[in-house]
Length: 138
Image (cartoon, rainbow, N blue to C red; front, side, top):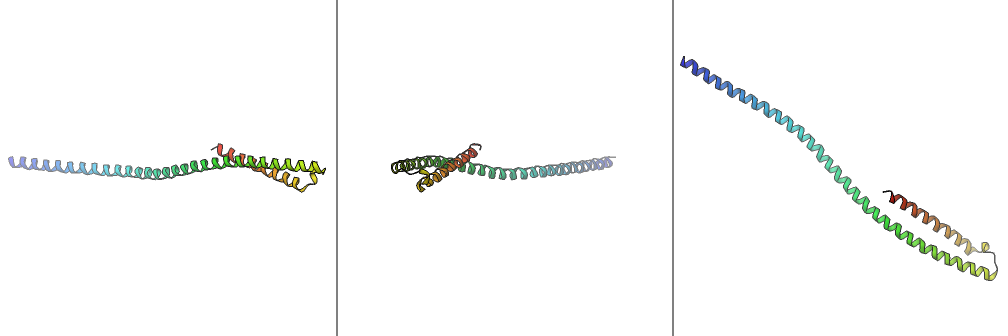
């Protein structure tokens, strides 16, 4: 009976080892499948990081461009103010000379040029302000 008992004990130990190996194999397969799911998500997050970095770069470039445009607006506003002042001085000079010689101001080519230039300056000021309105919404 001892021999039989020894055989059964050895068989039981082998069965236990086999069951342990099966459990370990099952756990390894489950772990590998889970790791694969995590790696898919890692890949998605890595792609998102690349896109987020691109967006950040674009936003930084847009912010710099906005600052540049604000400076241009300010410079344009100052310059147009000066041009408007110079044009007004030209008008004063034209008006004075026309009065001295007693000619209708509307018949003087310099006055017509003044009116045209004055209108252009006004349009440029409007466009510059419209540009500012766009920038201020950003």
